[in-house]
Image (cartoon, rainbow, N blue to C red; front, side, top):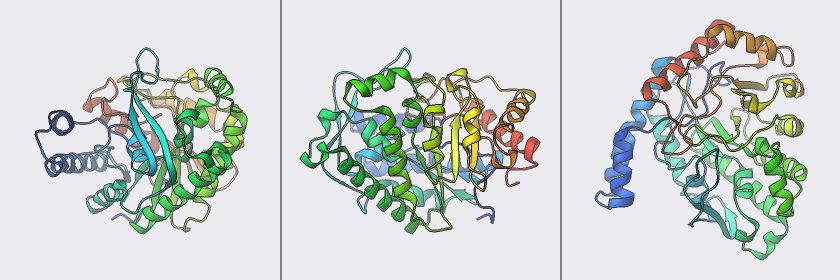
Length: 372
C-alpha cells in the first residue's frame, strides 16, 4: 500500500457504473432466483477488482468498490441497520422528469449499528485488493431522518425528534468505530440533505410536515459532529453534498448559503461539494471554510453528461474559488458519483474513465500532483 495518505488533490465520490455482468447477475439473483448468493458475490468480486484496477490506472490514490454490491447509494446501508426496514410501495420519489423505485425507509424499533453489517466486509474486500488507500462511502446520519416520513417512525420515544437524533448519532458513532476496527482510515459520509434543505421546495415540504428546515440543518450538523468527534487521529472523514443524482437527473436546487456555516462546523476533514451547474449557486460559501487543514473538493466536473470540461475553464473556476478559500485547501473531484443507483447515469464506461482522468490531470496542472 502507498505511503500517501488523504486528503488528496484528486478524488471521487464513490459510485461507479455497474458493468453488464453485475446487472445480469443481480437480475438472476433478485428477480429470476436462478443463481445463489455465492454466485452473485463471485460476479461482484470480479467487478470490484476491475474498478479498483481502473481507478489505480488513472492515477487516483484513494479507491472504492464503486458500490457494485448496492442498488442505492443509501438504502442498502440504511436497510442493514438494526431497527430500520425498507418498504416497497406504489409511488417513488420524484426527480426531474423521472421517479425513483418506490422504496421507503421505516423505523420500527430502536436504532443500532449491527456487528455483522455487510458493508464492513465490503470495505475489507477493497482493502485486500488495492495498492493504494481504500475508501468506503456510506450515507450520513441525516439520510435516516430526511428520507423517513414522520408517519413511518413507529417507536413512541422517537416522536421526540431529539431522542431519534441521539440514537442516530450513537448508531453512527458505533459505525465509525466498526469501520476503524476493520482497518478503514478513510470513511466518507454522503450527507446530501444539507443541500436539499437550501432548496425552497424541500424547505416548504419540511415545514408542511411540521419541521423547521433551519433547525434540521443545525441538528443534522450536530449528529455528524457527535458521530465523528471521538474518531482516532489517523482516521480521515469526508462528506459529500449534492442535489440528487438519478439517471443524470437532479432533485434539488439552491446555493449552500443557508447551510454553509453548519456544514463547516461538523469537524469533517474533506468536503465534496457539487458545483457543476448554476443549481449550486455561487462559490461565496467557501469563505466560511475554517483556515487550517480541512479541504474542499469542489465538483466542477459533472458525472451527469459525457462532455469533458476544458482545462482552461477548470483553471478559471479554481481562480474564482481561491478568492474565497486558500488554494492550498482545495482539490478536485466530480460533482457526484457516476451511479448513485444501479441504473447509473446516461454516460458510458469510457466517458466515466475520461472524467476520472480529467480529475487527476486537473490536480497535476493546478497543484503539481494528486498527493501535492
